[in-house]
Image 1 (cartoon, one colour):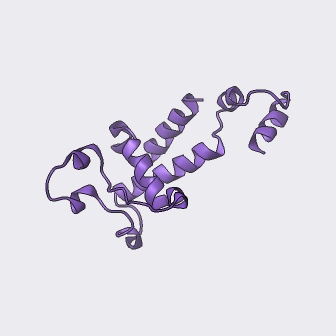
Image 2: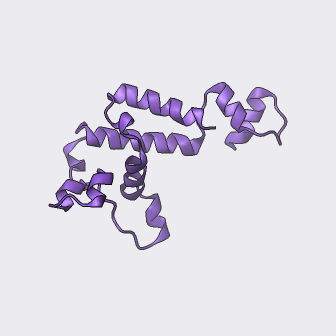
Length: 126
């Protein structure tokens, strides 16, 4: 549906490749927008700017391990084990995976710059 709307807006053929159109219009695809919002929430959690109710929502690796393990060095948050496939769409799991894959240069930015830089990062990779 999103691709059809882009084709209508740009007066392109309905079978045209839409990634260049998204790049030209500087728009995010829905999947990328969801990833961006999840990463923004994780950044807010990491910088302790979310309400107290989320304090136990995510587990930091340093809280889980007393010793510096390979896992503790590579990642910031502990990734919970899931039993079923639908658990991969939960923000607790998906947020961990996305945050741990995000480059360190993004993690130290202010919230405004974080969102701006990450948006440009997503648009650039179409």
